[in-house]
Image (cartoon, rainbow, N blue to C red):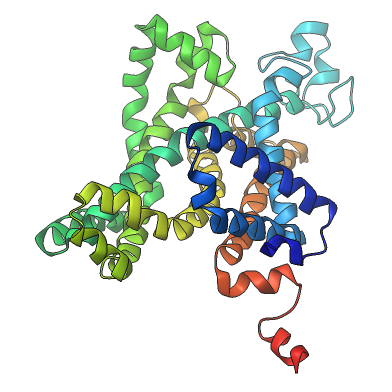
Length: 375
């Protein structure tokens, strides 16, 4: 009997079982002996999903996170109007559509000072936030993990050199450093996009803009590159600390005794055993990237020609004193919901990946209560 058979399964548990079964089948197509050797790991995956299913906060966060991804992917497709569509230009009715409140003339969330549909702007802005997250996190994670693994495993002079380099980046306020890099890079990126048809096509596809507007994405790309510079130190620090705890364990000593090379020890033995906290940090950082990118675009609002949540808030703040609350409230809510969802999911994931706290989520009881009930 597997550990999953000891639970009274809910509807979500059955969905989880189907997902695990499908994943196992895909893996077995490439590695036939993997299932036999990893049955305990598969059962552990099931228990983790059962724990998530028993956490309303975690499920709520996951739903909000998936909603952000879906809107980011499909937003430009389902948007009722293009990002540069103006009711004023289309209808010629200036008074009606100038800073129109929600619900006027088909503008679900109102319009801005150019008569553009705010709802469509937010849907296009979701694509920008999603692209920023996808482009920033993998680079920061890979760089940080590599530096952390090397630093923690080798120690000595290597550790001192890499950690002092990390300290230099951590000594600067991240937002200010990113703002400085992004401001310096914008003009160069604009020239690079203008002189490269291939880059223009790629940017048009990724950000769902017209080819002739691709150069206007340069400020957003500069923010993304700037975030590469400031995002890796946190992962380097966390990974180094975890490696220091693991590198003297018996399984690492056994791997050395068997003559395995350093790469195999780091990536096949140590990294899988320290990946849990890194995954939690990555999940929480999704919200962090969304918030930081929005903050930088807010500060660079005058340079933003493409819809971005932060830039929309900055532009709308000029009219807040006139009572045009929808220009700030709705993009602010979009940022709030997206960041909150990933934070809730990441917080639950932290408990799920820790075996000491996972069981209390599975059974909806406090830690240690089960022992009292057994008595």
